[in-house]
Amino acid sequence: MYELLLPGSLPFLLLLILIGVILLYAGPKLRTLKRIWLTSTLCAYWLMSTQLGATYLESILNQDFTPINANVETIDPDAIVVLSGGGHTLGNNKNAINIVSIHTAYRILEAYRLHKKLPKVPIILSGGIGDSLALSIPESELMRKELLDLGVQDRLLLIEPNSQNTYEQAINVAKVMTRLDMKRFVLVTSHTHMKRALATFRTQGLYAIPSASFHSEIPTRQIKWSLYPTKTNLARSLNVMREIAAYMYYKQQGWITISDAFN
Image (cartoon, helix red, strand yellow):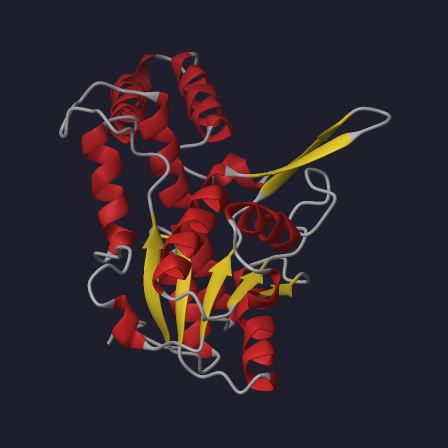
């Protein structure tokens, strides 16, 4: 039902087309409205499916978030906090395989990159079972497994397995950091998620240093301002729409109470 109200989703597109079809049978008096409705639907989805449209929408959330590169060692954080971004359990009647989502995979890689520069800093992995229909174990456990496979020592990995959304991650990570007397940390998540994550964490009195993971939806080879529609670019636009809707919801719930998360 949520997707039905989200611009950029397939259900939302079908809803717009359904309204357009209804208007087609409404008689000649609404001829102008019909043209405007169908033309606007086509143009909006075409634009969201292009590199130009997706890049513009991402710029609303991006705020120049990038991975920390220069002099990361001088930051001297108490911890690296990694927020999960989804996972899946695939199985039959006998066996199951648990895998991380693409977003989570790139956050793991960013955490590992930071670990190579800060090899003694603990890594807090935050994420529970966000969708019980898609996953059977906490996402933090999946991240732990992948980092162990990459060679990170188990003693450096701290698991927070109970959070089901960004708000709960901020609450639960704050508890972990208070218990361990940690103050300064690097926050790892996707660059489009970073604005909401920072605002939510800072509402809880946690002031993180952002280090955005590589953007998984951007192809390595693509014409910069191409107007050719692609499924990848539409997925990027849809991701932004989800984040905008989530940010507004968090503000309404009082989970984000600061007026500007970045001053």
